[in-house]
Image 1 (tube, rainbow, N blue to C red):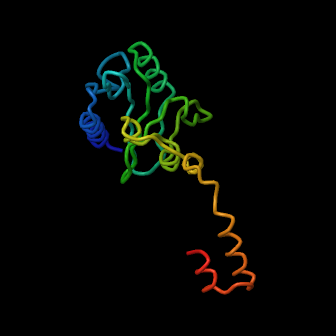
Image 2 (image 1 turned 90 degrees about the vertical axis):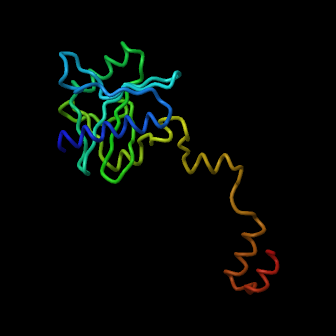
Image 3 (image 1 turned 30 degrees about the vertical axis):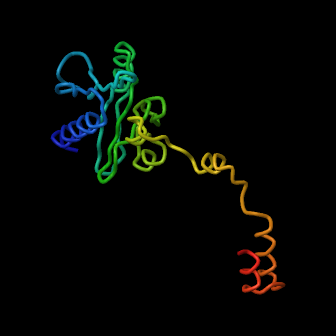
Length: 174
């Protein structure tokens, strides 16, 4: 990916965080401005603070060097922020990961695949506190619904076995 596109994506993330109510700053020429490794973006809302390394890709997996991730964690700990890797694939939203949740390659680098980002990453609304991810199992348990009604199942079974016709079943289920 081009450096210009990476810069544009970082600015886009800064603007989205700003619109979500975060005080946000993009590190100047992050990664090359100083001897110290700085995160791409610093963001906070008065309660939570993030140091974010932002990466984007057209669809190929995103790789981060072990040094990049170590520098992010070191900076975040010293600054009092939560380290996060923000990834964005073309035609997708931003997804966020704690560095410990990323796949580590045999060479000690970190990798995020598009499918992994979508399935396991924290999406932007959850990241900024506007929503919370819920699994289908959690949703089913929360609804208190223990499944289909036993009477309904008996009627449907009777229809399936030819013991009852559809019209009779419909009348019973009304």
